[in-house]
Amino acid sequence: MRVVISTSASVPIYDQIKTQVRSAILSGDVPTGSTLPSLRQLAADLRVSVITVTRAYNDLVAEGLVRNEHGRGFVVREVDPAVAAGGLAKRVDAALLELVVAARHARIDIDHIHQRLDEAWRSGTDD
Image (cartoon, rainbow, N blue to C red; front, side):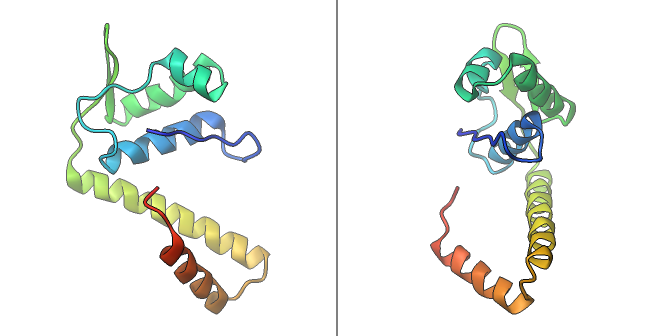
């Protein structure tokens, strides 16, 4: 699992971490029963506070995606495939809304958006 954060983004760092870990869980990249990186390890890797990672992980616990096991850390719970698909669809919807807002601010018309989306789709990766 790879987490990449942006310190210049308007989204808080804990939310960036939570969103990326959630997506990895829902897509199956992080399988049921596996442990997430420790709080200290992820904080060190990302060069952020342990408190920031703790907040992200605790939000994932509240969402029912992981559980905190004494001695093991944060463990991925089994996720219903329908719930996973719904969660990933919500992420796509949020990205599309952000795209629409940005395109309108940039005065890019819908045909140009379709063209650029087609190009991005063809050249995109599985990440």
